[in-house]
Image 1 (cartoon, one colour):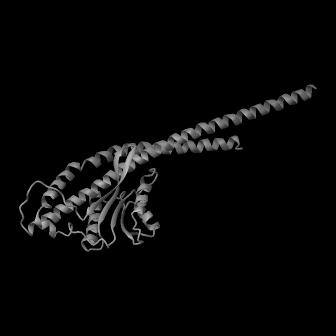
Image 2 (image 1 turned 30 degrees about the horizontal axis):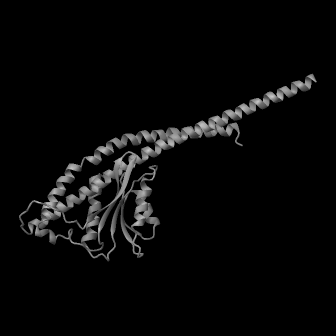
Image 3 (image 1 turned 135 degrees about the vertical axis):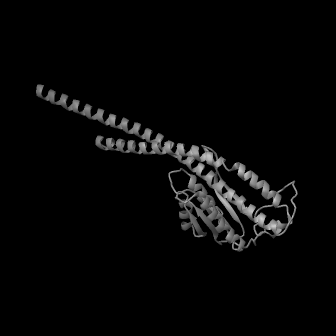
Length: 283
């Protein structure tokens, strides 16, 4: 049985941990507000980009763009997996990594991965059938726009060279503070889009315009996925740190009760010894 001194030390240790987790909970709550606003910001841009691309995709020139042409399915797939650079976010990172492992081909061939965030990179290094071809940090001084452009440039280079059959985004979609959903979205080849508006054809200008619009559209997809993931990360961390703080409070209560019981037992023992000593003297 632990001594009073040991119990007191445990109370002190858990109290210190509680202060840390509570501070992290407050920081995550503050960051979540900004992350939610950032995630909803590009929605209008994405809508316009989708509308423009759907109109351009209806032109004959679209069939000449390599971004619309499907590559052989015998080639490996490429997944852009988005996690975080930091832990203590509940199951946020493990959910993405678990889904990434499930995507590995049953045939035993490798799945190519662009890791966005340290946890995706660490997971790819541990799993034999995951071939990490590029890694990008999110919590760096590099502007997010440059990171998005670098990710897309690497993905399109591999796809247009015919080295991969498809390019997919694996990220966490923010639904609410207590609900985040892992999503897998294909960005290459660009899927045909329905459009009720006709567009005049003027090859090769149309091809250049389609390629430019396609690049901007895919950039918006990757940017949105990263921003949604960042909001999901802060929500998951806020909930995890709130649960950790509550658990620390429960532990402190249990240890305090144990300390008081041990203290009362010691006092009772001392009183019994004093009474026994007095009886011995009087007797």
